[in-house]
Image (cartoon, rainbow, N blue to C red; front, top):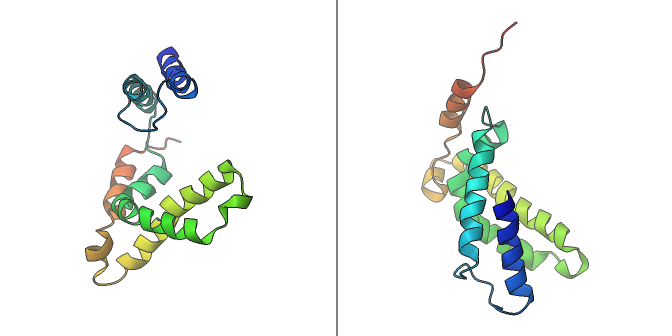
Length: 140
């Protein structure tokens, strides 16, 4: 945990002091941050006993979300006047536009006979079966 905080501090220090002004993933200070954050997430996920339902749902539509999110976010950014909202509101709007709206579009398009050729197959049935297998048995 200390390593993640220190690496975030290093990235912020280097950016705000002007040592490196470019915002890019190829910066040398991002490497320890990425590695340490990966291990922190791995530690946190290893403590989870079962997969949450919302993760299963998003995972089933992940390929379609991957395909459609740039298009949907671009359309939203052109239509919504972002000059009158806060950065946090912008983040929430773009998250909804990038995940939830593509999920709805994938669901609708997957109902069409050729929908799988446009947005890929949804794997919700398979993932629901996996979810049932990972659920703890309920004891009385």
